[in-house]
Length: 290
Length: 92
Image (cartoon, each protein chain N blue to C red):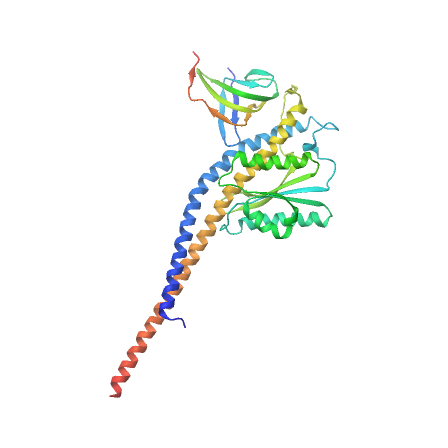
């Protein structure tokens, strides 16, 4: 049985931990609101971009079609871009993304493909280094808040590898922000561009589409930009999801600490009372013996 | 007069969405204006100003290149960086 003094110090240590988790929870909640707004504000652009590309993709095909759109014709060389947060203390948030990416990489390796890994975010780097460190092409940081500059840097790297012919297929892993309680690790194919065929084609009411300059030139400009935008929106989704996950993880931790404190306090009071009773019995029986 | 549905979005946010009378935009092959019922049309944009005419008010947005897409549903501008310039000009 621990002494009363030891129990007192354990209680105060759990209380200190609770204060920290509580503070982290509140910070995450405050940042979540801003991150969520940013993620939602970024959606219209990505959505419009997708519909513009889907629209254009229908009009170009055949051998002249851009490789970013139709692929290189090979499926051998894969690039896996894994985007996580830089920091932890967010429950299973980073782990979920990394696990999804790992399963994908392993499946590709089993099929005998060449796989390269590009990590964005310190946690992806730390968790994948042991297994796939020799396959890293680069490691980047996600940064405090998602910015176009970060997304651009990642996209430039991906495009550079593609232009050198080192990549046939590029896939991006991130966590889609569904709601404060659900974030789903998601894979998105960057190259060849994923075309959303679910949307019905635009009804042109009999008129022909005019392009200035022509389709190929527009696509050549649009497709690299689309990759940047996809990465940027993934970073926004990740950022919002990270704070949501951190908030609920820290909420749980605070509640756990509260439970521990009441259990320990109960135990402490019991042993304090037991000791007092014991001392009383000693005094009384000593008095009776006289 | 028929109204044109116009939306201006940048990667960070949607700057404008709504019904307007006319929009002027800087296309790479020349500036152009769009009214309601314009033929389907798509072009890249160069850095410059997008002017939005609504009733008697003219609003200006500075953009750093992007795309314009005209469909029967309206005009969408996807801009790299876009910012509204503060002064609103009364046209008449």
